[in-house]
Length: 285
Image (cartoon, rainbow, N blue to C red; front, side, top):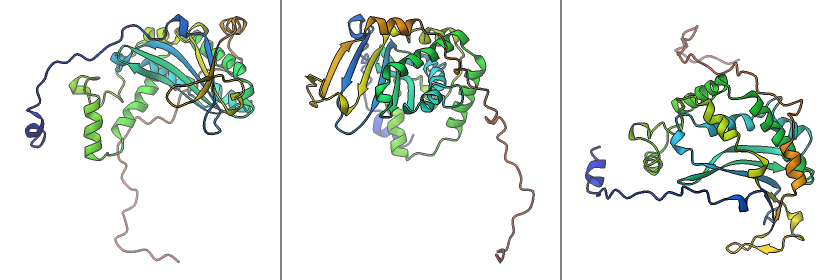
């Protein structure tokens, strides 16, 4: 405080209102579309996004973290486990992503194999089968509790950061959290809101999807050029029969919720050594 007050107390609070966009920029005209993108490097990916509301005010319950925990699960019965067994996907990242104040996206990004690039529709069918399973299972308090416990450990035992970098990172989120939660708002969970989890999950439907498939093989068909970086791409509507197939999927027989994690600790007391430390060097023979 001895440093902060002299340096920053003179800054006038002008009560500037942060711009907010209450209408999502992606309306019905921008949905049910599939884009093909030609990368500079030899990359292959399938990027899926759904427009969703800005849930940053719900950081104490964080439904996006709950869904990301399940959709990104890697164990038996998971979406990624099945996609890997088919040889189509190397990795999967899923989560809630802010756009700007007032709107956001839920994304599922998949790193594809060469064979996976030929099966993007099948991969998306499996995605919607997994989402259907989650909807039928409903929100589970024990899963939220696991997310809460893991988040608490992450915050409690997080690595020390350089003071300057840490101060800058905290300053950048001061408008996102109440002052008393600036340090922990990004990490900790407090409130279980099953209705909010289900509300977000129900927004992940074929009628709200946007798809981008990235690969060198699409260069011959990409007839548009992006303004700023010169990236070649093509944008087409998703065929209605494909959308209808995704709407009518039933859960895949291999998909299930993860089993409870038995290895999340609850007791962090330090255990005394059973034997005293040697005060003298030990000869290694």
